[in-house]
Image 1 (spheres, rainbow, N blue to C red):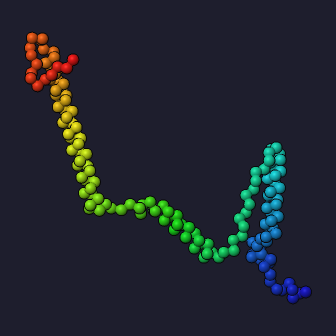
Image 2: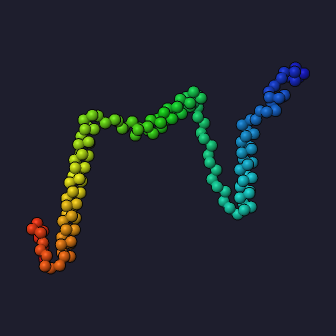
Image 3: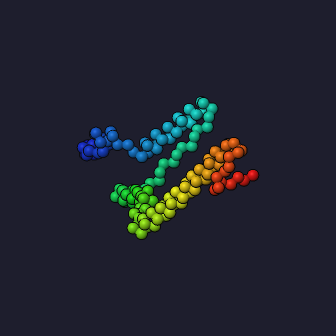
Length: 145
């Protein structure tokens, strides 16, 4: 028996004092749960549901990191997918769009000129309509009643 005490074990010394078994962890969790339930019972409330601990994942660290890397890559590709859909315009597309813009500008210019002529004619009509009745209207101006 003297020989058994001479063999060092993990429970002795510095390492043994820091070691915590899974049984001790389970006991501590159960004690903490009981304390929470007692505290809520004193308050007269129902304790909230405790989140369940994640199930054991038997994958290695390298496999977990590879899965995280793939997930991040897919997320980045999804974010940049929309940006990759746009491209520069080709020369013929630019020319087509320019021709449409020029046509719209010409139509707008013609519309403004026609409006200007109508306003000018209206102002001339109002000016001659305000003259005394003895004066005559110019030949190009018609009085419509």
